Length: 259
Image (tube, rainbow, N blue to C red):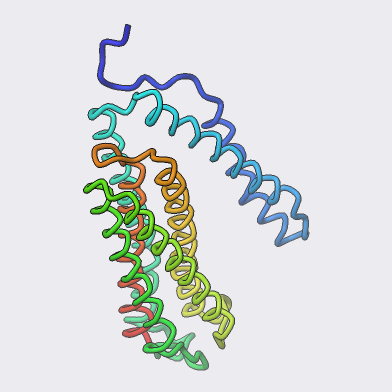
């Protein structure tokens, strides 16, 4: 008989299998870039997707149907999500450090000016400003969904979460169009490298956040959430707000000040 409020996780093959499949993706990417062999990369992407689905399925069963996620477990999971977001802050801090290190004191190799000579930056108040408005609106809509869930207005939460998902996909579409129109590439001096690394990884985080929200939308339609038990949605909302804040810093520093 269980005498502790904490959930003792059962043996699972998913951590080991997930680490192997995730490791195969960067190796496969290198093989694709150097030798045009895409088998390992495709296998890694496919196996990671399948393992993620099975792992998340088990967690949903533990929390929603088996009742293992007590208040103590939820507190630990919230702390884990907060530490994960903190690690993501440190991840983006490196990109901002590289950008400001190169822009505040431009080297002679790039003409001692910023942006470097020959680089035509994007218009600050066109697509980047529209992207900013789209993400800010998505932050409003996911907050609307959060309050709707806490007030047991599930229909309203479904609408607002759908709006958030569509706005996130629209942001990715706009960023794809923006990349298609840039006059520079990732190999064009340190500006191109820092620009595409910072904004590209942010776009990847938007894609991950949109997937997170999509899963929450499915669970919301299946009545997995209520006003006292919606930790999965709460984690997605925290992650999405983090993505919004990072974009605000990117817009102000890279698109506005840096241009």
